[in-house]
Figure 1 (cartoon, rainbow, N blue to C red):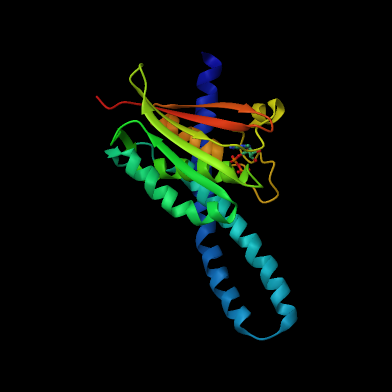
Figure 2: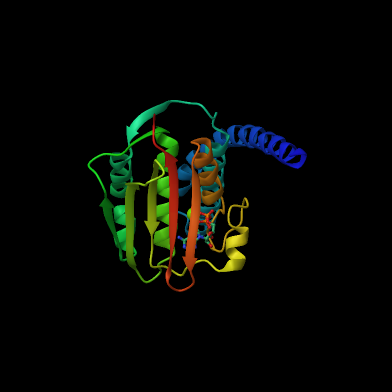
Length: 226
Ligand code: ADP
Ligand code: MG
């Protein structure tokens, strides 16, 4: 029990640090981006190459900070009773173009017309975005992503993200959730950790089942509101 307490404390210090760093760095980066756009409007060919590199590096920093900021958000903001089926549909609309580009078909299977959950909408959205993006990225030659939502016998809501992707090996699985652990060239390795943290803040949990070269199922459990 002693160990656990120390770990929890360390985590919250890390969270505070992340908030500080992210806030301080975000503004100058936005400004640098603006000036780069101006630079780009000059017609010098050699500048273009450097511009592209700088731009993509800054995009990357921005993405990392955006994900870190999610982690540092106060834990009890705007919890509302929401129909998560609407939230899931919104996120699918948002990512459908990206799915189509990658030959991924997103299908849904919902057990009822609405499923109410106490949640912080933006954070829950972020979890759905992370899970759907990971699923799309796991299917480089396309496939189906099935999203199921239902309530189970134990008075929980289960949202399942079922892909037909490359799957997750045991060694990757053991590192999943560690900050910055990624197997992707342009990955941040933050999406899963942030999602797990968000769901835990909602008194829920995430369970992964995966078979290499077959696919992955991510089950997100949330409590049914009383
Ligand atoms: P990122 O997507 O930036 O790499 P994440 O934290 O979202 O970071 O995921 C970490 C790693 O977990 C990924 O690099 C990938 O190896 C693995 N992963 C997550 N979701 C899936 C999935 N649905 N299928 C296969 N691998 C996955
Ligand atoms: Mg990801």
